[in-house]
Length: 398
Image (cartoon, rainbow, N blue to C red; front, side, top):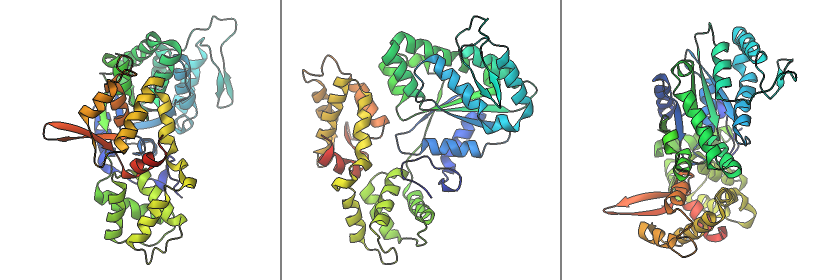
């Protein structure tokens, strides 16, 4: 069964062929990718689907790197995840050459490799694990193999942010420069490609640190919310996975997506789950029952279903977070939307004017799925991506 908010696998994954094919076209064009989409759109689930259904000549290895706090730990995690991948257990030649290549190195880490301990010889002077190590090990391991490895690196921007917070912009710059070196290496890119993704925008963070030039070798690929037709199909798909055999009428599904406002799988499944929890009779469901279930999402006992949105603002620096909270509260109070001028005026308050980048915070709130910007004639304004999030913020956001 599917679980709201978690990565979904195999038969629980709702296919997104348009976006999946777009990613493969870019990969087959030889690009290293930066996968851009707001939170809760389903990026990680899509990456898992690509891993489980690679195209001929490719293998996808998934690496979740959020906990890495240094360049050393990042490259170590890549090697550990390659070591634990299905591919290495299935390909004997790669397995042996990968182990042999690591065994020749004096790098300062160790791990169990299919029962064999790979470790630094304490008589040798260990060297840091760097992009040069990754290059050497992978190219040696792939000798004689006519296959390309796609390294799908999830929560990569978190690593950059942590390095910046703990070691400063110089360390962050050096880390991105090492990634850039790999991506621009012709021999490496002939055999290995990256897909970088995460729940904070790498492009937004790089701009803040004035490091955008170090990621311009990546090809940006966006994932869109579902169309209304896809959202109808998702509701049927999700309820079937929850062992609800009924297909809802088009009018009921239309009401659901009107209330949700933004066709993200997370919000769609949240409403479906609430209806199931309310023991709705899906054979006789009416509009009022849908609205009642949606209203119950905002009951006190359900506040945790949205509270992660507030908690994620802790990633911002203190004054940035304070500005973001005031801005979101202001947007939540609008009947329609907040004008760009009003949002910018808030940033010019004495508390924020000299210490907060308006563009960085507003871009972060859009990238992470809180707000979207709409353009009307010669002006722009901001609104919550979903009326559900707006309603929660009005009640519990402060």
